[in-house]
Length: 116
Length: 113
Figure 1 (spheres, rainbow over the protein chains, first blue to last red):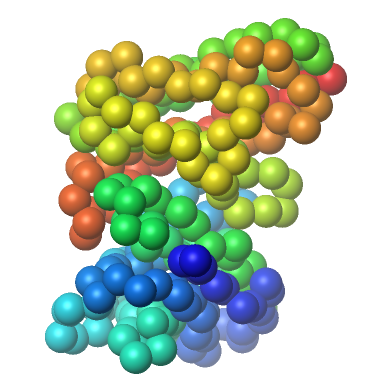
Figure 2 (figure 1 turned 90 degrees about the vertical axis):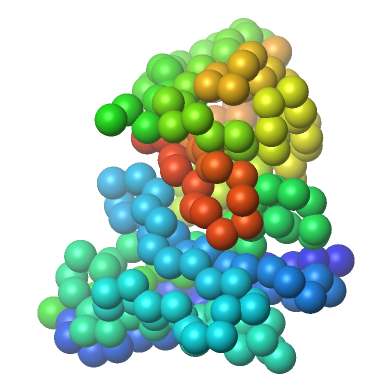
């Protein structure tokens, strides 16, 4: 069965340091992708970044980048130069869970706390 | 610039009452979703509609029904509310291609007493 795994329930990082949040998608699909979303304490869901398994280069959006390891089926989110406003829940999600078109299932999330 | 609009924002129900959560998007998106998020937990998919005219079960469909009324609107109905359905409910929509993100509403906080 397909499974989305975020192994870090909670993490601390010092302001201005980089942090890596893990996400693994156990799938038999040859072609897949992973979204990352941020949910601050205010509750809204904010899209951060996406990468597909056939993208040749790791995706980058400002301070966010993905460390996509196809063999491990993981797409870890790297946040560089952490800011206090990065404190939030972070969720990953494949766009077509289990091969079902547009079925969007989220991992359990990682709570990131940025310390001054 | 509305995006995804959910109504109501807050609701209190008594056990056994019914209600419908409304969701509308103005982005001409094909796919729409309903999630619930319990305190301190992640989002769990209740139902989704990959395209107008189709609906499918998600992870936690029991106790809910949905209607894709048209391309814009996707409603979630609780026929007989239970305290276990106390949660924050999010509606989302997406274009429906694999590499385009979903956009979320602001959520509905539902309490069943």
